[in-house]
Amino acid sequence: MDLKVQRLQNETLRLQTAQKTMEYQLSRRKLREITDWADMHRTQYEQYFTELRHVKEAVRASVAMEDILRDQQQLIREYQRVWGHLRHSPMFSPRELRDMGRVYAALLAANHQVLRQVEVVASENTTSMGDAGRLALLATAADHLATVHRDLQRFNRQNIGIALQRAKSTREIASLRQLYALPTLTPKP
Image (cartoon, rainbow, N blue to C red; front, side):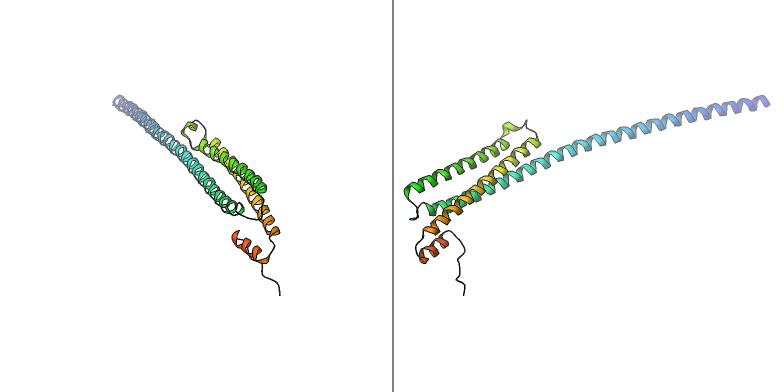
């Protein structure tokens, strides 16, 4: 009987060991499945975030291009408004008007170069260019445009100032102020 009990105990131990081995293998398999699942989702989310970064950069570039184009439109409107009045002004000689025209042409050529930079960024041929490169080009274009715009404004103010200095009567001054949309001066009491 002792031998029979001992055999049953040995068999029980062997079955318990086999059960623990099976549980261990099952646990390892479940952990491997969980790890694989986590790796798959991590990879998937990395791809999503990479795509989102690209979209974010593309949106940023698009907004930058939109800002540059809006600033260019403002520059062109300002040029057209002031030059349209200056070239018909009796305050300037034909030679002075030609010189002014050359300066305006140079400013517009510089403005055109900004447009070319934006075209390079927007063209499909630059798909090999990274987002950082595109944004750097746009930042350079925006800085260049700001410089051109400041130069245009300074030149406009200078020419309007000359026209006001040359005006002989109060009526001419008031007319020029209205023409160039300058504030009117009210006499102090």
